[in-house]
Length: 224
Image 1 (spheres, one colour):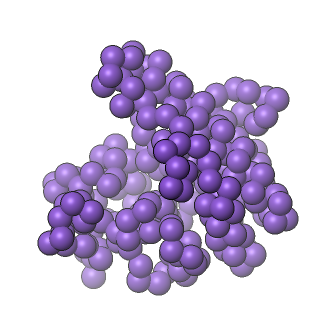
Image 2 (spheres, rainbow, N blue to C red; image 1 turned 135 degrees about the horizontal axis):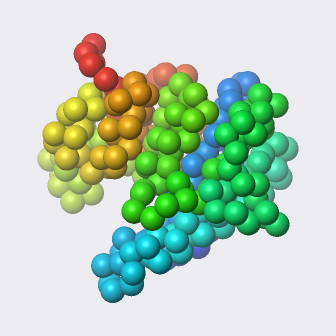
């Protein structure tokens, strides 16, 4: 949403699309799980009195709007895409079908997963971990506005310490909220590494894919 209070900033969407194309052009298979916080946050609505399941369902619909927006931005720069939604809406998106998603990836299409997991009470982090495992991804890249995982909010505390590497257990024990605990546990159980990085810096998706030392890598066992 850029500097706006809600919605989609076309320039931000264009920047993300260009970063994705840069990696796609290298022949890397890419799937994107997209959130909806720029339109709606289910947890906040629930805290203000709305039924949590209803609030989360609205949030899932918000992710579909972002998915269609990203698809448009990608196709304008000649990147082939498919949007798959966990909530059936066949006029604008395919239903999520694992084998079809894998086939799209084989055909060098960027697959955008919308609708979260299709269930309330699960975050976009958990949806990303689930889809990553279902498509046999090598790594889960968590794109944020922060350049990694800190021991406390770096925007509030000048003495916040950044971690270059962490184990899944450390993330859970330290209660580092930049990663959802359910997603962290799912990745830990299936040995799927996570890279948390700042997407607002041009070229960082490519840098993450190339294994450059940006952000924070979370993995199982010995960090060395």
